[in-house]
Amino acid sequence: MVTALFKVVLMGDGSVGKTSLRRTYMGEGFKANYMITIGADFAVKKMELSGGHDVSIQIWDLAGQEHFKSVRSTFYRGAQGALAVYSTVERSSYDNIPNWLDECWNNAGKKIPIVLIGNKIDLRDQFKDNPVMQQTLVTTEEGQALAKRIEDRGAHASFLETSAKTGTNVEASFLELAIKILEVGGLR
Image 1: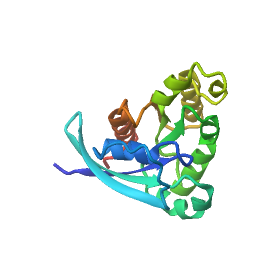
Image 2: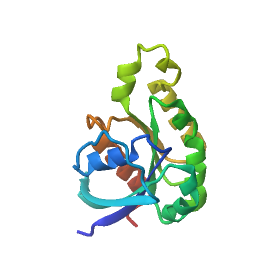
Image 3: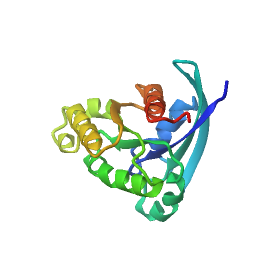
Image 4: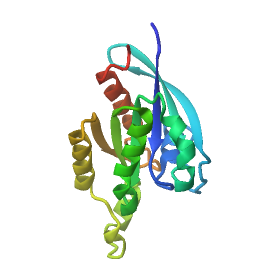
């Protein structure tokens, strides 16, 4: 059987947990200290989807800082799907997702499938009773609504909440993206 190769990008503001999601997915473990990604980081993992499809996912973990924007543009080319990541404890990262989608779709040349990820649910649960933090928290319902707006823009989209720290829904996020890519004809 032929193994398909899916190029995917992990995109979102700096410090939302993109690298931690990738590391957890790759089985490298969670690291609490924050290290900035310079340009992009890269990993490949094989998976078997139902129906006997063998897939290798080529993951491009893009730097989220604004000053890397010009470098990022080249990494979108040829991408077949994207994980758009925001932090559930940092509203500005959620508010920036439409900008990330525009950057992605403009540079990829088409509206590739998106899995919207609300990461750091472990911290949201920790801060939900803190009145100061409540202003910056993003609810599950807000994430679902944003995924719906992405679909309304003509893209295949779905939504999951994750914790790179605990591993909650990390594997499911990449699996969901692979399924979305297959749905739009990724095995041609």
